[in-house]
Image (cartoon, rainbow, N blue to C red):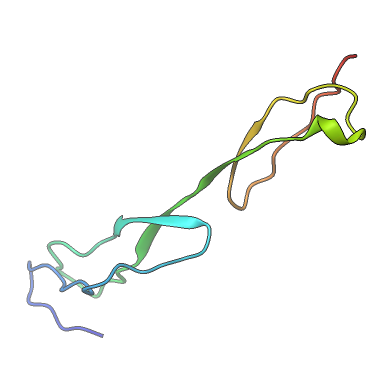
Length: 82
């Protein structure tokens, strides 16, 4: 907990926080404090490209890579046509 003079900014930690699968963007609500305030990190989910290997015999056609956000579902697969 930190006491901040009315209208001043909170003092932020020296190191940014880390969270698996996310990128730290910034701190919320730390400027111009005028009342009791919770300061918390704002996160952005990382983006991953999922590729499929059709050379092992399980896939009968190439499947386009999918871009997926961490913690989100990838949606429906389309059925490849031969």
